[in-house]
Length: 454
Image 1 (tube, rainbow, N blue to C red):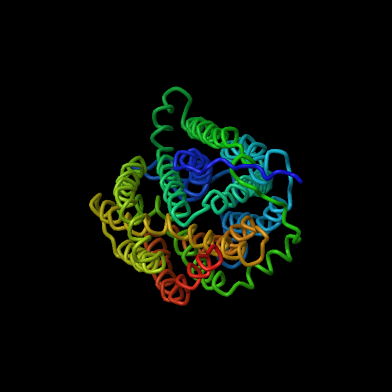
Image 2 (cartoon, helix red, strand yellow):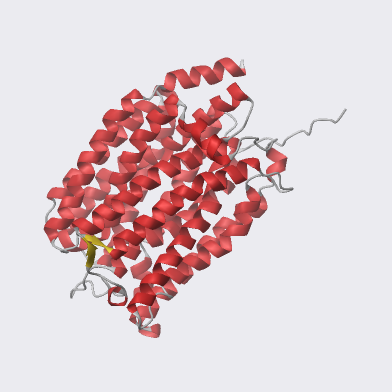
């Protein structure tokens, strides 16, 4: 009889190493989501001469009603990304590579993912606008494909390394920390470019700044991919269920659907806000784009200080109550943005207020998905963790795609009022998401896990 392999214990140190991968991909994602719209659309002014720096190279006029080409390209990228999520998740769940079901994908995708990020800010800048439009579209599709092929297997490890409720909350806390650090550092892009500009010129400074950040991100993704030996910690067996059958089974889970409904709406609102953040600060508050990092760093610092509180409260009162508080808190942030005036103090008001929901919603939703995936594994004997996280990303990326279209359509006039309108949309939708999340039954899920383990 074959002797069962003894697995190494999962430690918090290992979970911190794993969290470095989140820093890497969030930095790349932040560079694209926070700065592509800023540099490829908009118009420069005396205080922010880099706004719309690459805008002349692509089509800017609305091509269908008020829908711009750039908005449609971004939305198409998110839709393509969402569609590939279950395919990659199914591939990962069903794989049986020597290095495991997840790590081999991370090793293969880190470098191409980083290179494609650099290309997005470099390649679509020829003298031919139609060629640039085409190149931008193709590169964005490839970018999202590579991101999916890294992130979907990576996210599946959240549930598999989170072998206990304690570890699930801890790993969610750690990756939330590295995620917001990566996102925050992405806001340093104008500062890094400003330091390089005297040596390489205005446009090249942006390209070199992106290349520097992409290199750092790539190293962060590669370290856990080669340090963690998946088979030493996880006794994973390939899933027998085909990708779309697995996706249907995942969405047939009632509690998972309740979670996803609110998650889609939340990400629609958050994407509107994140896409518009640089514009809110520069166009509404009159703040230079070089100050975005200072404000983001303030928000990140306060949020990180709240992490231990969120971690402790989640174990004491449950994740559901805190997530609902986070939804309502973000609604307040969006409302403040919609009515803000000129001055740096408005930027700090938004930053401080946003720190609370950022801490809550940065940690706990992943733990909720891990809980549902764990209960399903215990009930069925089949581990489809990859598909649960892919189904979540499939759903919220559809919300992000819609947000991209809405934002670029509402702001086609580039007036302050148009940017305020996007904040109002975010406020309304986030409030609705909070109400919907009341239907999620966390107690039933945790009780089911405890009963099966006992």
